[in-house]
Amino acid sequence: MRTINRRGFLGAAAGSLALTALTACGGSGGDSADAATRTVQGFEGPVEVPVHPERVVCVDHYTPGALLDVGVRPTAVAQFDESQLLAEYLDIYRELPKVGASIKADPEQVLTHDPDLILGTYLPHAPDPNKDRFAEIAPTVLFAAVDAGDWKRRAIDAADAVGKRAEAEALQRRYTDRANAIATEFHDVFARTRWSMVMGTSNTATWHLALPGSWSGIVVADAGVRFSNISHEAGTGGGLSTTKEYSMELVDVLRDSDVILIQGDNTGRPAAKVRALLANPAWSRLPAVQSGHAVPLPYFTTLHYGQGLEVLETVASVARSL
Image (cartoon, rainbow, N blue to C red; front, top):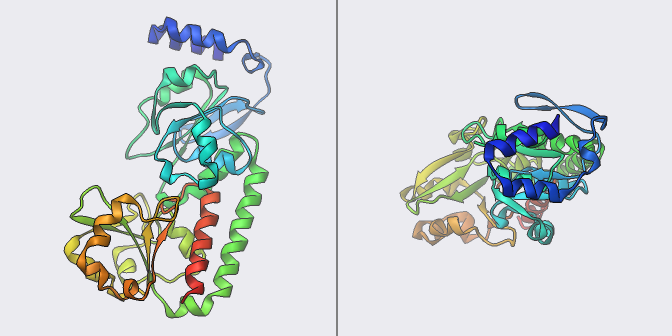
C-alpha cells in the first residue's frame, strides 16, 4: 500500500528527480506487505505504524527532542530556531538532514529519506499545509497541540509511536520526582515569594507576560512556585492563549514580583526578542531587577521532558538565592 501511495505522490508531483531519489534509497524491508504494524492515535484518528520504525522523519519542532530524550535519532528533521533546542542535542541536530521549515516541511525533501514513519504536531491556529501529502509518502502521525502546556502528553505520544513509551514514562517519573523534591525543599521560599515570567515580541513597543499555563509556566508551577498577582489576573493560560501582551509603558505591573524569569536561549542568555524590555528604564527600577532576581530561563518555550528537567534546575537555582 505504501508503494502505491508513493508512486501516486510522485506522479502528482511530476517529479522524475524525486523518483530517482526514492529508487536510490533502495528496497528496504519497510515496504514489505507483511511488515508488523500497530495502531497509534493521531489528531485525526488511528494510524497504522511500523512496530519497529527505522527511518523516522520529524516535520515539526516538538517531536525531535521527544525522540532524542528516549534515545531515538530521527533520520531527518524540520528546520527550526536552534536557540530552542536542548544544548546537548545541538550537535546531533546540526548533523541531521533538514526537510524544510517546521510545520511547513517540503514533502519532496521528506520523500528523499524514504521514511517508514513521519511524526509532527497539529497546531489548530497554524495547521501543516502538507499533512495530506505526507500521508501519501508514509504513515503520518500528527499530535494535536490542545494548549502550549500539553507538550508533556505529546512527548509521551511521540515516544510511543516509535516503541519507546516505557522509556518516556520513566523520564516522566524522573521529572515528577524532581519537581516534587524542589517543591518540598523550597516550600518556605515559595510561600513568601511571588514569581512572574516575561518574554519579548517582534514589536519592540510591547512585551508578553507568560501565564502559568504556558510552555514552561506549567513546569515552574509543578515545582511549587507561586505566581504573582498580575500573572493570576492575566489568566491561567489554557487553550493556546498562554501570554498576555502589554505595552512598554506598563512595565510597572511587574512591581509585585519578587522573581522575574526572563525568556532565555539555550546558552542561558536573554533571548534576542526580550532585549527591548530589558533596555526600558522602568525595567531597571523593578524590585526583582534591583535585587538581582530577574533571571534568564533557558527553554522558556519548553518542548519536551529533557528541557522540562532543565527548567526545574533553573527554578531550584533561583530559589537557593532567595
